[in-house]
Image (cartoon, rainbow, N blue to C red; front, side, top):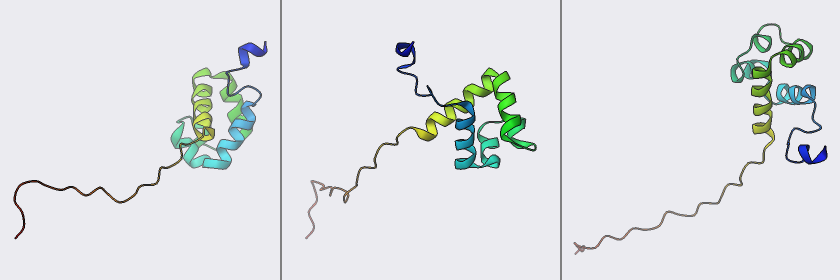
Length: 94
């Protein structure tokens, strides 16, 4: 059984924990814009959202995908030095 879950990044993370982190990170208004479902926009609560998400596979998939994007490590920004100088051949300044 552990072999099946070895590559599952959501293994051991409940839907409630995912939703709570998403609400903490984005807030209900932005979460409602990112995942367009009524339970995030009209009188939102964790309890009503969990009920809907457990019964609606497409909505749960969207929430899980958003959670994975939120928690996935971002690549470190590479420092950018000055732009390289470009020298043009041809006319010379005199």
